[in-house]
Length: 110
Image 1 (cartoon, one colour):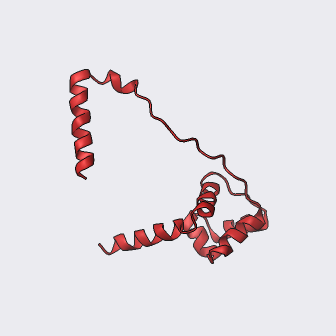
Image 2 (spheres, helix red, strand yellow):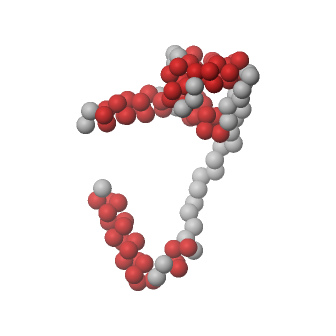
Image 3 (cartoon, rainbow, N blue to C red):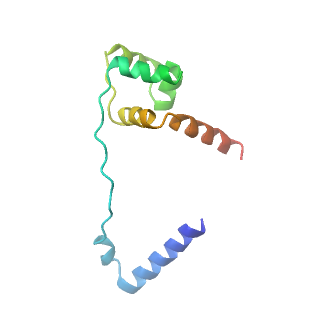
């Protein structure tokens, strides 16, 4: 918290010294983003089953209905954007969902 506060104070001091125009000229370095991988119905089902997630849980976590998960696994619908990225994250970090879920449940009790 102190670090964020310090950054805000430093930024305000810089703006008061130099004006706000210099902020527009700043650039950030970004890591390249991996292209989205397309997943077949079999891959989606295998990914879900590998971690022993039910269709209901998988859908709830991804913000889609059970019917949507079923449609992905049958190939009648195809996941896009955020769902594909979440599949990639899950493939690269098998505990990503668990850490998120357990972090959320711990914060409920604080």
